[in-house]
Image (cartoon, rainbow, N blue to C red):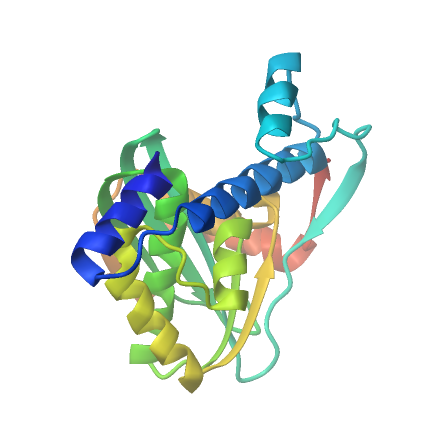
Length: 236
């Protein structure tokens, strides 16, 4: 329903052509990615009716694999680089969304962190808002050797592909970010939530909006843990 609404808005406001086949292709891709993520995480709970529905629209689903334990590492950036971990939160689906990011140098010293609110939306919109804000803040501070790390495969894919397949209300902001990316020496990576604790704490806390050029007290322990242990355990 969101993708149909997004296509309608693009047609009305951007004079683009409404493409039902493109919408269906996006929905299929989205369902496949969700099922793949759930299978990887060991959380797939597809019922028989789920299999029938997805099969009828041409999406293949798969059962969850047996669980296993993996180590999750947070690594600092190399010299002259800045690393930002981003995260978003949503208090409902939809609900109030918030976005955050924590910038660190090679010594894991926090160079700044932010927390902003984005109105009412979905979790993936909060993740998108977080990476948009992080890129703009880094550009304004001339941190052009930038490593972006997020626990959202959605934003990792968007950055790696420079796709414009984002919610209509974020389109102008996203196009601005895409234009700025040419100024960066950029690296993008995914990390599980266990390795993204400082940004997760920033996103989920009830705090005032804004930029802080230091580490707030709530994230200091998580930052220290990342630097001195590097390793967390996750069952996948």
